[in-house]
Image (cartoon, rainbow, N blue to C red; front, side, top):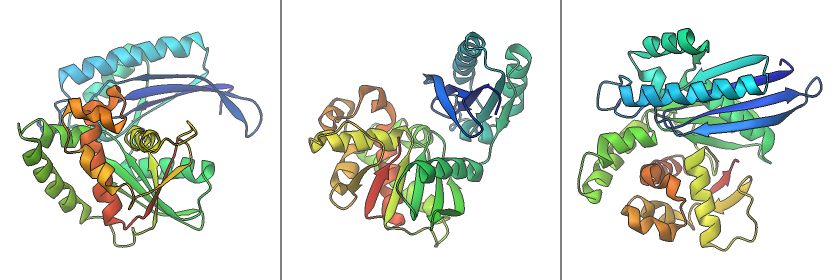
Length: 289
């Protein structure tokens, strides 16, 4: 790692940059973190996966801002990765070339299995776990890793993301019940592709959706601490909480203690999370910050 390294993550829903400073051979600390809700995948899932102008423009402006931040902090190296939305986009090369030419940022599109592995590595290093299945729910995909005895045994990427489900179902139907029913059938069908070995009583929730759900459960139960990292809860005890979120209108989400910034995709995210937890036979969830 260079003395100061900037890492950019371009997801389907949001993009962020973090800048680290190396302090020793294996040590580093966080200097800066910046996040933008670019939703680069907006409109893509109803248009053959093609990135649309609205998402491209937002992503460009966010990356331009990130570049200014990187310059201000004098980072010596920049690593930029993109995930599901760019992975699926037939016009990904056009976007990548534009960013390279105009902002001098080289983007590396990583596959879902690698994305799942990175998430699992972080969780297994920072949480008191030896066995479990990490679940990283993003805007375009949900990436899972099977962890046994502290080692990553297998990874799998599912085409189940909050923005994907929102555009394919919840934005398409006026009735929440109809949208939910069709989305649920789609999710269950995709889950059939998951290898049978992906079974565990413990699930590790990664990403904004699972953090939002964890925080909501904390507040619902008047949990005395405000630390989401390593927060555990029983899936069986909170099944109805997860299931009911996906049935609500925007105005009714407040009673679930969900942040307003999460209202637009939390119904889709909770439905995905609920169905995955059921499928892998999880009984407990631990949330990664």
